[in-house]
Length: 143
Image 1 (cartoon, helix red, strand yellow):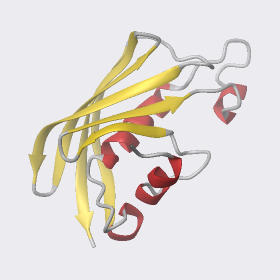
Image 2 (cartoon, rainbow, N blue to C red; image 1 turned 90 degrees about the horizontal axis):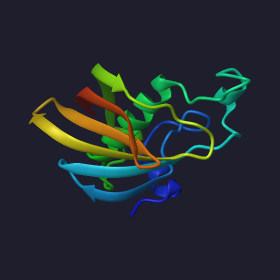
Image 3 (cartoon, rainbow, N blue to C red; image 1 turned 180 degrees about the vertical axis):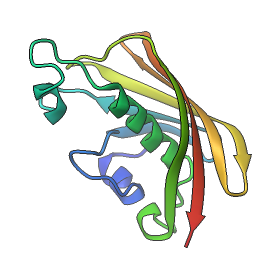
Image 4 (spheres, rainbow, N blue to C red; image 1 turned 90 degrees about the vertical axis):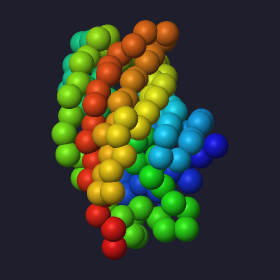
């Protein structure tokens, strides 16, 4: 549905902080499913942890947040030009680690949509296991 080029049009983040590789399902303002391919080439693995590389939880949350931003993407008005998203709050629970070679599937559902933002529920899975569940709050600034 969205390859990396389309994602880069929608998100302001760039390497090494772009945390999603593909959007495979999108129902604007309702649901998005995105993929993050995790490779040993990720820069964070050199220090987290050298003997047993594990993806930092904060980067899993970032991948969820970037996926959620795609819910509000308007191809006529790129996010980087006309909208700024602020991550307002995070309530998260980590259940399993993510290792090099894993593919993370992130599903984000809108729980509450208000005029100035949204609250979403995000679930990340890898290898058939739930790795993280989070509630994210966004405020959207137009213009």
